[in-house]
Length: 509
Image 1 (cartoon, rainbow, N blue to C red):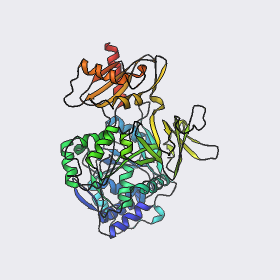
Image 2 (cartoon, one colour):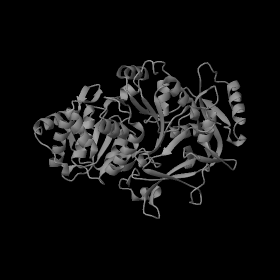
Image 3 (tube, rainbow, N blue to C red):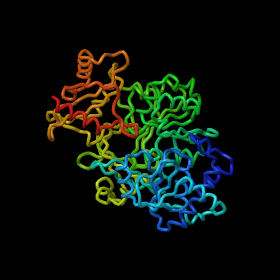
Image 4 (tube, rainbow, N blue to C red):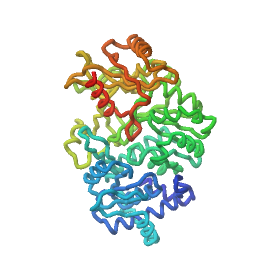
């Protein structure tokens, strides 16, 4: 596999692989430690069931990952700060051979073999002269990893990602992100348990030979200290959610004059607003700004575009991009047939980036994955989009974010887009307040800009401006002011929390 081969190559070149709270780790150290651990796994756990990697951005999380690839078994990255119930659900689902601990936080469950950091030190010492044969490496159609995402029932669902998926993603990402920078530095912000870390690990580390700048949970939660760290480390590449980008851009130090190396600034994972894109351009006028679309089930691909000034100033939504050269995105109407350009439909993706399905859950796999008439493996994103005449794809919202208000279909994210264009609004979200199975009303949750009063006058002004832009039935009946919008552990808008808040407000009314 390319990442194994490239780590060996970068090790011979004397490169640094990672920096963080533990200092530096070279590619040579990564190579030697992973080789020894892989030999141990092959000898001790021949069944090759999944391995849980338990930690928080320690360098040996990369060691453990590479050892799994070299010994031909899937890994499950599990942050050591997850709630106990979530850890138990994940562990019971994947039934791991062993828990590889990379930090000081003890694994909370009993009944599983555990390799501690001191055990790993002994393993590295005892197996330092062993070379793992390439015949043991992960095969082209083998499962590389399982990413657990939140399911609608509350139980996590494990998305199976294969080597073929990873390789298809990497060549796609390389098609728009290779700039020939010597000794590139990549801000390793995303927790390894989230699929977007694939870009950091397989493209940044495994393809480019970048120095991965680790940001652990504590640092990622302390924004002033995090900006200090970004300024100090001066990365070339940053890939994050628009929500995190907004947090950084609120700090005057996050700009081209201070973070002088930032060359490629990419956002994804949720819709980016014109306001955020405009702030990105103002702060980094000479950087390549990118907007990407993907899902865990799509190996976080396969749609991307560079953000242009024309897009920022357009009245259209921000496009999510063009489909990759190794992917086909079909937009299907309610009749199951492709819709013309300009018409909205659900996006179906056909690509080698389409993952294998949900781990040991054939029933759920059949809901979202299928083979088309020609036998191609497809994924129904359930995202509503349209494509313009130039091939740009525009995201409208989730098919399950459609609600009916007074008999009218309303797309919540479309309301949010217009609400976010109002001058006094810094951030916003819209949630339906339900009464049984019916939508009683829409509630807008608004964070106002500095200096704006949270008062009736502001509410009237917001509603008046919205009424001039959208149908009256789309205008939220109630506006609630927050200091900040709720976010989930991935830094995205927490819509489950919003629904809970809207239910409470409805009950109070």
